[in-house]
Image (tube, rainbow, N blue to C red):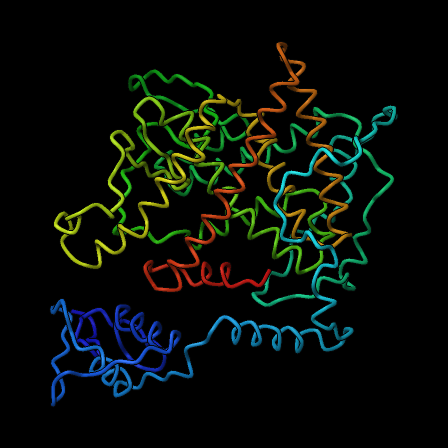
Length: 467
């Protein structure tokens, strides 16, 4: 039995919340009460009994027991207070640099928060004649301008959007244009295969020698008999036998190893090291959301459509035929063992159903190839971050965005058929992908704020970042 909650005697008070030892349910109650400035009144004369097994308890007496347990209201920070704290921390860390006023920190462009599809207003990129091949031209020239070091700073505070001294060593190479779209495709293809290999290591029982042997092509080794092995190309990290049923009770959102996996993916993007500290924070956080939506949609399209399953990035599946109940149906509570299970299910399942209906199904109908998926995912990242960057950062996003569009166009035309329609179909899919990304972020903000998920502290940090 774990330590008892000082408020309701629940044996799950493994840590301190707001200065007192209590369970997560009492901590969430205290947080809501203080944050929303709620007032309660006790109907009885003496102190009421507060116990975790009771369905209805006196809120006034529960609040008083919270204070008696040592919980302090001043430790419950509002978003504005947390923002001010992170800004003070950032000002101390950058005391040697210029002091930026709030007006300078904000983008001067009026469409900073505009997510509309304005891609076709940009000028098309022009390609130069290829020069004699050198060692450095095995990758696009823009991709080679970064330092090989992958060290970068990701603090949780609000960082200045003005160029810092660290970015002066990474000048933006405006005059360099990649000459071969095949090298661009191979670069993003390599990024995605590396991401898939990391997920195979993390979430499957595949032997390491097989993973190392098949890393470049994502071959899946199928054992037909003890003496016979057959290899087939698998353009996703999982096979059907690797999938595990999703259990909402144990779901915690993204965990620490997920952040590590996607950190390696993010730092390989071209020109990443030339971003300001604020832009690096922004870029990484948006990649988390885009990857959750697009990778889940692609894995589901390639692996889960036969059985109408939604495949998540961690290898879990959720049956969608018939569509699971949302939790808002009449008498839905009777199917759950506890109120906590019911509340968590009702908070999570509508989000998963929305992703399935609004992103997975329309994406599956396009039947994208792995190469199209690699380019579309990178293009979505550049397009989403474009509206959150400074003008200097937007120029980099615009340049990389146009490079990928040109590469995608050449690839679609080389496959025969109506290349223009295929390119347009892929580009228009970014609309519902970005909309689902926004809804996902909003849902996670609410889930973490009310402690619905027992999530990793880093997930709190990702969602508390000030855009």
